[in-house]
Image (cartoon, rainbow over all chains, first blue to last red; front, side, top):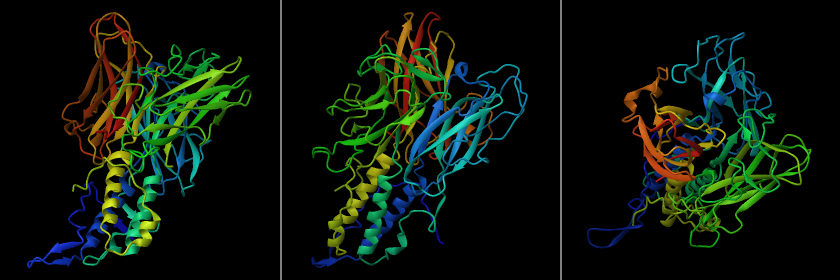
Length: 382
Length: 182
């Protein structure tokens, strides 16, 4: 087992000086340089920096205090993610809550017992502290607990959060934990010591870099659409409430503003930047896009429901439809076949229909009720 | 030739280059360097930090003349190498005629916590972004916020709103935040 210190800061890589094959000698002749190893060392350190310190936000949520669940709910929140990142095998669930006005038992939050990596010890501190009247500034409490994911599964896994005895949650952010150093027996890393100063780059060093850099680039990619209701059994009236989205329309409506029937430049959706986030030369057809896949936690009570995601209209037919099986019960619906593209040529300040805004729309087929409790969308490398 | 640009997309290393490698091909480390720069600046550090949908979460109309905390956006880590935040907001004025001003605030605000995340000296200006809603129809706004705090620190983010008269009400339909977007 070895431990490799990780540079705490990032410096953009400029390798021109390192990578000159030849230099002009004093008499004008060209001589071979032998310092290529310096480039490989710099790149290995830079890659290790990203291997250790590019923690990913896994989940986020907030609720205005008036709509927060004041009693407790199990689960309060559910979310999915693709567990394909070798490093940062734990994450911390950060919670902002307000204390209740009265308690019978101590209040707390805990990892949802249905989570893939559930462990009873993943729990916040318990408290009996109360307040006379909840004031949104003064009565905030910061809580957290850590979740260990174990070995990487390369599968979609689920996690969630439950609250008990009056723990009233206003906001949640879940972040992967950064690594202070890399343990060579556990973590994926690039070995900077394979490259010997004064020696030319040898194939083994660069092959290692290529492989690991590609691994880094293709895993742990951003989650770009995240929404969750409180709980997974609510049946609020149309259009829904904090406990779920409710659709009875037989034609598409925007899930977050049912007065809208189609994606426009101003309809509510999830915005994100994707400029230069594809692969290959952008000028080549097909390279100016990157794929986002979706899952929906939903329940269609009678007939099928459909949830549609629609992205930048720079790309033709840039939509996908997920069928929620009528009578199929509460479940995560969707697969990697349900994808749209982000356009990696669109400027970040573009506010036209070409922008990378993902709208979520829903409808019910024939009649019935569609309830949506959570939506997740993440980038996959293709 | 400058080599630190991140305005090139990622080019996956090809097997044919590996087999051809003879230790003298300068393109290999240069290409790898570009790939790393792109990954850092354009892909991996650009994780959306808050996808705040949406109408149901902040459907409460703002009808106060005093500044009003609409929502806590949570506790966030500033990624290494990035000290700015881009926001996209979708808002609508639903009553009245005045303008509603929205703000995203970092840190402070009376949050009782003693460690570094509440150290107000980390933050030059607590109110780090504001924009207004003056239209009765839906409007999407985007902008960049400079956050003058140390990287890799934790910060609190929350959203406030103020309007000029109590009759004016506005609604936020969505708010998305993402670190490191240039």
